[in-house]
Length: 226
Image 1 (spheres, rainbow, N blue to C red):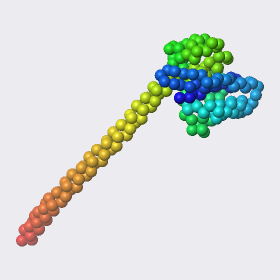
Image 2: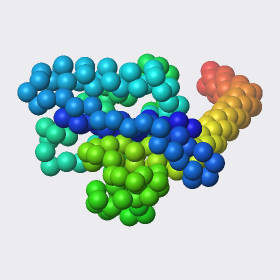
Image 3: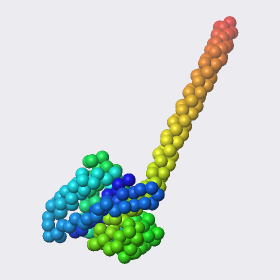
Image 4: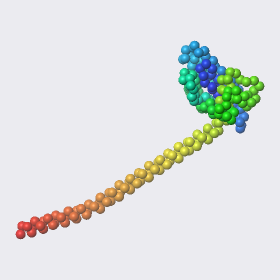
């Protein structure tokens, strides 16, 4: 599995390429940070990030792109910029038929450090240890991008199992709903059949009753005439 990890951001967008092997074996193949100046037009900043991501996608040809999900931030403007940067990269990957998976910051931290509340220093230290790096990747966005790639390599089997379980559950639900619909249809047909039989049986009875009533009326009329 070749994972392109993305730590999205407008000012700094971290990109990494992680090769996942047997078990929990992972190797860092590349890492970079795309920078855009804050005074640049927003559309141009997104274009620069998109072009850099497209170059990575076409050059490294990852099998999946792992992007940090914007979970919550107090600064709405920063959150919007982060989401926009992640969005253009997800779009570029989708256009190439590459799967995209999103991971929350706590999922990444838990996967790499075992602690969903770990700070950046702890994440960086574990990234260095896992990848056998002698120096810390800088800036922190580079370490975060590497952590995202590692996280997906390790979480992918669980994600696949969950997706398979959800698909099986959905299939079982559809089968149950179809069976239930067939049972309802059968019950409705049986009820209509019973009703038709009841109506058919009641017709002769009504005819006999009507004939008897008519006969009594005629007899009464004749008696009155005499």
